[in-house]
Length: 419
Image 1 (tube, rainbow, N blue to C red):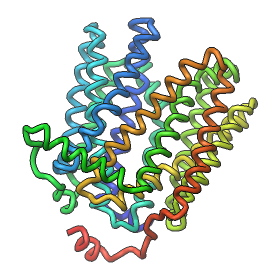
Image 2 (image 1 turned 180 degrees about the horizontal axis):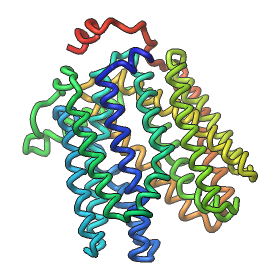
Image 3 (image 1 turned 135 degrees about the horizontal axis):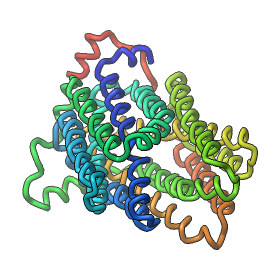
Image 4 (image 1 turned 180 degrees about the vertical axis):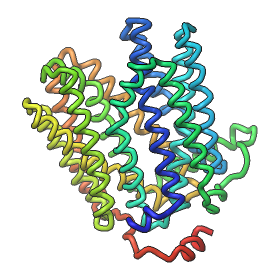
């Protein structure tokens, strides 16, 4: 891990992610608050969530193809600059312009984000040695978790002080800074994507390239298992995200201050999980890690549902975040190690589609059944989904392994390997 911390390229990638995610938190809180304040409509706020989620379902396969054909560093920087420009349109709405501009901006920004996600995941194996990928992913998770810990309160305070105009300007500026950090990355291998130039003006060419990504997943039993596991976990996550606020308000009867404590505990758990993964990553090579992590997550989620004192509910959410970080990093690392870099963008894009289908299923199930079955039974059902998925993962991924880290090479050797 010490050698990775001194890796300039990796630090630039981590720094870029932290800056842009910190800016993102300003709009994640500001947009729903602004839309609801302007319309006083739950449906209008729900439409905003749909606009933000829809590209994850529809655009991510296209983004994966593009990430495999284009220069990935340029793609990442371009996606950042595009988002920086699009967000400035919100200044018009903030000044009294039509509300539909918010939905258009949300849709375009989320679409560019899918291109960023695919290129970002595919870039990492070109700047980090294969045996260090798990710890590199843990370092990225560490940065994201740190931002998650401080982002929500900072975003809420910013919106309260300066409104949508200030939030949009800060998020736009964060994307510019992120792009500047990204162009400082020097990774020769990242310039050798499978295709060169834009997609040819032939739909068949695009279909062939996308089909190659589908075949990569469908011909690997482990990849198929990972897709099933991801979909199931996202169902549980969709249920939890839909039911968390009603559970906290109507079942726990917590005020906003206590809800803030729960959010902080969840962020702190993710941060500690990333730190632990970085320290113990060399010993977490077996696919059994995923199953064990999901079983622990199921137990902690059930504990959260049945607990009532704040100390217990906060502790349960803290513990719930720990294994989820470990499982997520292991899965991401396995894809990065086992998929050829020429196909990696497409495969990661397709997994985003699988993820979004799972989340939509979880959100839909909770929305339809919440009134009839009740909040607590559905929360326990989400825990049961994690439990069953954990048992399945433990058996199906028993023999799957990521690479073991080796002693860090001298800088000259690492450079030679990248070349």
